[in-house]
Length: 371
Ligand code: F6P
Image 1 (cartoon, rainbow, N blue to C red):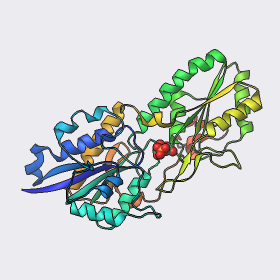
Image 2 (cartoon, rainbow, N blue to C red):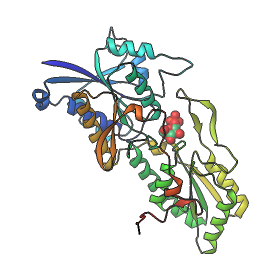
Image 3 (cartoon, protein in one colour):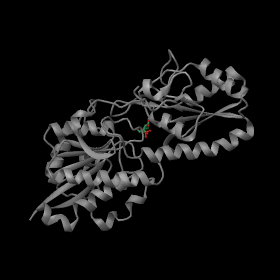
Image 4 (cartoon, rainbow, N blue to C red):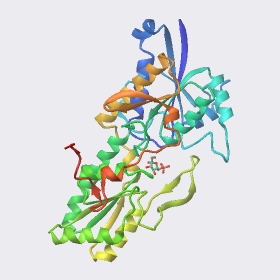
């Protein structure tokens, strides 16, 4: 019976849901009961620290520095309960124009004898995966990112757990905000997509939600705050996506420069908005940055389920040798799309149908019933 090697590699920023996906890839691929039906058996190797693990590994000695971990059902048995990734990850791109290492990575994939590689990633990691697929590497993608900004899928692992963090933290803020009659500006992650801010804000009932897809005016924010106070509110919760910016302004960055995937380090808009509200309304305003708390913690039930389904579907694709695809969720069904169809694209909030640019909040019309 033929035995094939599968490598599994989470890359880019971590999030909840990675470990459940890894667990279910391993359990499905090594399921003894399916060997005869498939006519092939698999062994699974975890790659440590993202693409970097495939660069640093020495295929001649295999595991000398721990870049590759042989996985089996017993090892991964409890992994789905834990956040982050047991394999580690890194923001390392083998296609970084300043230091391209893709040839070495491909040589290592070949020398390790990996028949297929499952890559769990967001836009940067899966863009690299797509480029390797073009070079003939047998790749399957699994979508993950708390930003939910990958196109062609209704879900990316980690998103729902991050939303739960936003709701829990805002619930906690409400009590102290109310006691002191303060305004709290809560900065969420999400890069250039407003999903986390919008849907997190909707879930926690935020009064104002600022998203990167719609440039806001400080005057309008202050007007809305004062309107609330006139109506008798004691406090307000304002959610600001890290990528939100005022009309005529630019994104606020934590530090200059870009990472290995060419992306800015966004952060700081929450404090800017807080200062402007305090100046414009005279009301005491504080800001808080949820930052990496949104990526941490145990996966919620949905991420455990989706990690499981995506992991199983990824192995299904390998068994059928349908390489160059990303598993996805579309209209409630687990399915797959070509990696090429997501390359270089980002999914962002559609302001026309999902955002209220007047109230800076979610839409109050959802059903559009035809006459
Ligand atoms: O893409 C996920 C994400 O959490 C973004 O929302 C955020 O801008 C970025 O990663 C932060 O990256 P790092 O972990 O490198 O600071």
